[in-house]
Every structure is written in structure tokens, then in C-alpha cells.
Image (cartoon, rainbow, N blue to C red; front, side):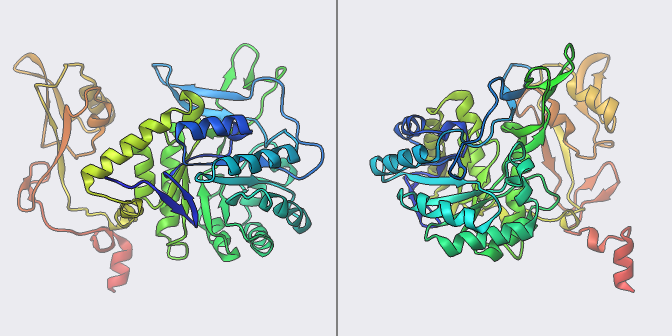
Length: 436
């Protein structure tokens, strides 16, 4: 039986599924409901410094991108950090941790980029008994205009500086939350590590405008006829998030740095993919806001069943399993050849594979054979791009079949040979320079 217990930088939880810092973790009521459903931990919605709390808009805060079936694909959020009193939040955090000692409770923080501000808030959080803090260097809207959030996360020197302040002034583990609104995610991750962070979490939301109302010509969500950029999240950001997680996991300078994976995680499979790329645990927000807290039950059961099938008994056997297989394009095997195959028994004759290939690719799929509607791959033209696989509405109807070494590729007329990559390819001018 797979053991899903998690120990992330010394923070223990019964499973690796945490709720991310966001509206679902804004107060005791929500967090308790989440724990009752089985969530392993939460990151409490970001706290600011003492004094008058921030002010959120009193109107629409969310925009969305939907699929054809109205399924939520992307979510845009213009809400700021908590607008509740700091001390009310602290009292609730303390009570929740007392009532749920086996769950992870991390507090997200965002205060001005001044050492005294961090020194002031850290002991207040520490007194609650919280398990750790997460430094919010990722929020891309509202707070960044005030010199906080992603305004800090986009400057590696600031990241390192604030992390050092926090490590010098608290015994709690420090998790640094990174912004994706940056050219190279490795740079702030390296800076966080240099400052002594215990872990990084990523990604925070992506700058975005999801829609424009074509009657009022206001971006959505619209507030009295005006709109602004917000933070984009949900399933649509998952590929971006996984790329950034993998970048940090395999970077020579940050390899081994614990990672909490965030970004579009909706199912146990999503979580397993993040963890295989190097995340020690995962954080979820949009899926909970879409389907409710009960989704964690499916996540737990699904991950347990899959790990049992694979023979994995602990999360450590999963974390980083795919990282060695992430490489740079130049090291891919250019002698690998695969061809598309259409299962005629599964084919529903929709023709999407043909039209996609005929109009936009390599004209490698016939639409008629002997005068009848029939879809068949022309191996002499197929480059193995797998566009047809991705547009086909029937799962496993079209598959990619690799050719074994020695088999003749009908497109080139040459036998498939063993591994070779771009670094030694005769068409690579740099390879020629190196040889000379």
C-alpha cells in the first residue's frame, strides 16, 4: 500500500496535497472545511502588515476562459491579499493549528521590502505555531504596483535580500514563492537559494487579460467600465508551470532545492506529473474553486492506486523520477523515427486527421482509398509529427509507432540508425567549428 505521508522541509502532512494561498484559504471556516475533506495542508491567504488592511474591489474579481463544453480552462483573478485584519487572521491560524496538529499550516506573507517590516511580522506568525512561512514574491497585480509581490520576485537581488532577512529572524522554514512573469525562472530560484531559503514554490499567477466585452469595450472582469490585468491560473497554465519546475529541478545551481509545485493541478495525474519533474508536494487552488474541496478525495485515491500499480511505496520514489529525462533540444535523438498508425476499428471517419495534415502539415493522410472514404497514413510522407494524434477525437485511434534500428524509413529510403544528436550533426555549423 502506497504511503502518501509527506515531509516537506520538515513540515509533515498526511498527504502531499495542499491548498495554495488564495481565496479558499482566507479564513478559519474555509480551512477547517478543507481539512475535514482530507487536504494535507494549506498555505493561508497572504497576510500584510499591521494597520488598515488592503481594500479589494466590490465587484467582479474573476475572468475565465472556457472550453467548448463550458469546462473552465483558465482563470483570471484581480483579488489582492487578505482584506481581513491581521490579528484576526493570526488568532484563527493559531486556533486551526491547535485543532488540526497533523496538518501542514503555512502562512503566506507580503510586506514592504524593508527589513523592519519583516522583523515585525515574523514573530507574530511564529507565535501562532504555524509550520512555516511562504514569501509571496509572485502576485502580479495590485500589490506589485506598490513595490511588493512580483515587483520583488522579478529582481533576484531583492529576492535574496528578503530571504536573508527572514532566515535571520525566524526559526520557521521559509518557502519562497516565485513569479512566472520573468524571462528565466532559474535566476530568482538561485537567488532564493543563496539567501538560504528552505524551498521554493511555483508558479504564482501569470499577467493576463482574459477577455474584452465587445459592447462596452472594457476588459473583463469589468469594474464600472474599466478593467485591469490580473493573475492567470488554472489548467491552461500547467505546461508553463511544469517547465519552470523542471528548469529548477535540473539546474546545476538549484538541483536538490525542495520545490512545491503549483499551476493548474486538477487531478491526481497532474500532481504525479509535477512530482515526477521534481516537486516534493503540490498546491491547488483553481480546481478547488471550481469543484469544491471534495476533489482531494479523488486525488488521494488516484495517486494511491497508481503508486500501488507502479510498486511505489513512498513519495520519495516518485519525486524527480522524470527529471533526468528532461533535456535540451540539442541532445534529442535525431535518428529516432516514428510513424502514425490509424486503427480502422476505432476510426469514426470524421476526417480531422486528414484535414489537419493536408492543410497545415505534410499531406501524409489519405481521405479516400479505391474511391471510398477511408483514412490511411502515407508512410512515404509521414514525418512522425503526431499532429494527427492530437486532433483526433478518439483516444488511441491514432498512435505513433517507432521504427526499430535497421528498418528502412520509406520517407528517406534510409535505414534507421542509432543515436545521434544535433551537436554532431553535419548540418550544424557549430559542430564543424568544434571539429576544426
